[in-house]
Image (tube, rainbow over all chains, first blue to last red; front, top):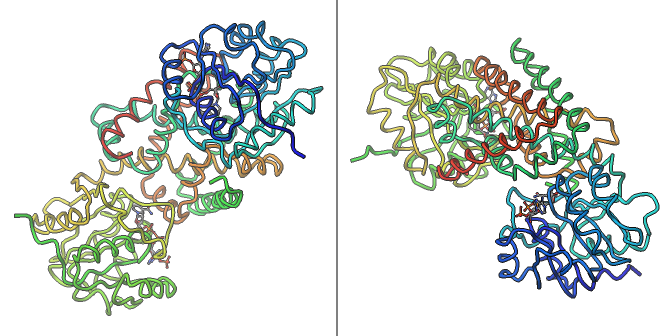
Length: 295
Length: 295
Ligand SMILES: NC(=O)c1ccc[n+]([C@@H]2O[C@H](COP(=O)([O-])OP(=O)(O)OC[C@H]3O[C@@H](n4cnc5c(N)ncnc54)[C@H](OP(=O)(O)O)[C@@H]3O)[C@@H](O)[C@H]2O)c1
Ligand SMILES: NC(=O)c1ccc[n+]([C@@H]2O[C@H](COP(=O)([O-])OP(=O)(O)OC[C@H]3O[C@@H](n4cnc5c(N)ncnc54)[C@H](OP(=O)(O)O)[C@@H]3O)[C@@H](O)[C@H]2O)c1
């Protein structure tokens, strides 16, 4: 029998894009008897209550953290430490604390030490999202068919882990458990590097002389258009990701730059066979992703 | 009064993704009394006839080129020269020859000299397409709301230019006339560099150790997923684009690499303000593209 995924009171810490989408999913599946949020921004609190995402929104942790048997921290990775210190004194023994941060070693480092003994700390990362932010961007079905990665620390209570995994399964995610360090390496390639590249290429275009820049926008073709969508993602969230997954990101930039240099050289010397071969190899990866149903 | 866009016989040279989509559009708008194709691949000829894209498909230019008042060459840029030499002796005086190649200076250089006096040569490039190829990928409405760039040479007959422009307008494209050299510079940024980057990043992933590569595919996040779609584009088409727009592409790679190095440095030294500022600037470009209705 799979463990009961429902919780009594779920407190969403920071009701942004991810936590508001999670609220929709929890409501739809009836997985929380009560949904509350600790949110410092009055406008976000107003929107969240107005949209019916939560029953109560407060800027006072003492009002919403005590009694919550699940706390989901959905703030930028760089805010995890201070938010952790703010909520920690109010946590109820036996509660589960998880997060949605896009980097996991840094969250273990920054949020972990605040969590008192008797509270279960299980870091997590939903591989789902869009370029939008704030509660108004709450997206129905955001996590359905997507991966939820959990990175429990050694010694985590298996029952708490099962209960949290069952929650994500109940909202349609596929749950995978892995080491925080491994998570950060994989995501550096699949998510962090592509975002950095998209920011760079769109930045390169925005540095062009006025006339050329105007034409780049006007004749924006597929490729560039996709990149601008990615490069419209939240600047603070992404700043924090790069600052907090520095080592893995720098390593993949290095590999990427070497590979780009090789293609650049092939273009310069007119080496058509090298280009064609490289461009053929990449098709296999696309096919594998389609087969893995992540396309 | 806008000129009559309809043609008697349109010959599509190479019935691939672009020309087959054009066939659908011409059929729907009744812009060609007769549609034929010169195509060397028997399988593509079979599919094109079976799908009703053309009335006649032939591997013999003498069967389909004579009598065509519009010839659209839709082959990879590197094949323009030989294809031009093959069709040239069969062209009818007064006909218009255009192409769909993604690079324009090279087409002027390679296709132009074959076109006999008395035939109007007007190079073109539809800023539309997908990662698919061949006639089976014919896409209804592919050109609607998209730009069609025409790069006529000095001395082009204005009536012929108007007639070709009217054809593209009739199928829903917005027509823009520009210099071939300017086209190649703009597209190097909006299309060629993004494709090169996507090929590179997906190539970097495909060079990873087996275990890590498996996980990259499995947990492929937004960003990387988009890149794999772009990197699934036709290898020959893209080889030819890079070989034939070398100068402009090398220049933008240079700019891009400098910009990436600056971000890499900011990550290495933990310079959060620089990252946040750069990531904020790029949002403005996205907004401008949405405003220009190209998103
Ligand atoms: N968006 C995605 O695609 C995605 C996907 C997977 C994981 N994630 C991760 O999920 C987390 C949340 O992302 P999101 O997209 O939901 O972001 P978001 O929409 O910008 O929401 C972030 C929330 O955190 C609050 N917050 C920001 N700084 C804070 C601080 N210093 N102290 C307290 N609260 C603060 C924000 O409140 P204010 O309105 O007051 O700033 C907002 O409610 C991030 O760690 C991100 O890396 C995002
Ligand atoms: N796809 C896009 O997104 C896009 C967008 C704008 C412009 N374009 C440009 O449009 C042109 C066609 O692209 P596409 O996507 O339609 O390509 P495609 O689907 O691969 O079709 C190319 C056609 O050209 C034929 N061909 C290839 N090499 C040839 C050769 N050496 N001699 C004679 N015919 C040959 C192919 O026949 P086989 O089957 O025998 O190879 C096929 O019919 C290219 O110049 C491309 O740069 C493409």
